[in-house]
Length: 133
Image (cartoon, rainbow, N blue to C red; front, side, top):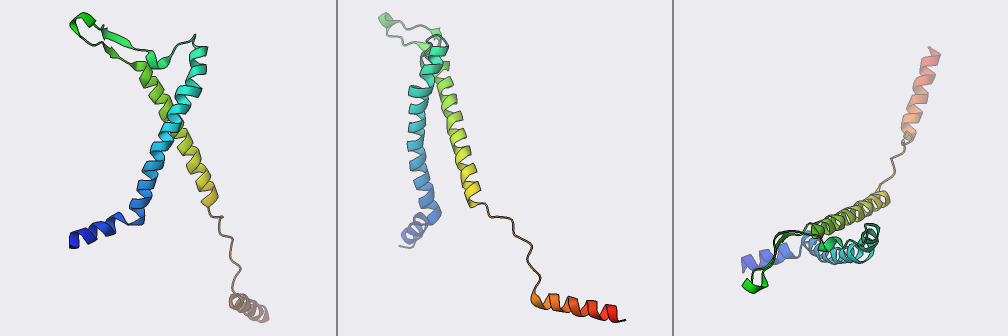
């Protein structure tokens, strides 16, 4: 029973739940960004590069041989380019999000506190005594 209670306390901590929510939202955000890259950003880039579809770019090391049931062996660098662009967009979005959050939550610099009334009074007394002598 002790281990079950301990696990329950661990799983119900705020940090664990926050992490779980972050992972789920991150996965959904990744799908949105992948769609943004594949369906919105890459088509104009492909058009600008003469209709090249980056995802189909590959370097064939060994062509497929259907007669012998041998699959093609290729390095798919186009898909890698898409993945790098997706990563850069996600990194930029997270950077901007953190920057906005920091700006919102940044506390203003503390203003110089006015001296307490007793300090002001003691300073005045000191100055009067100094001028009297």
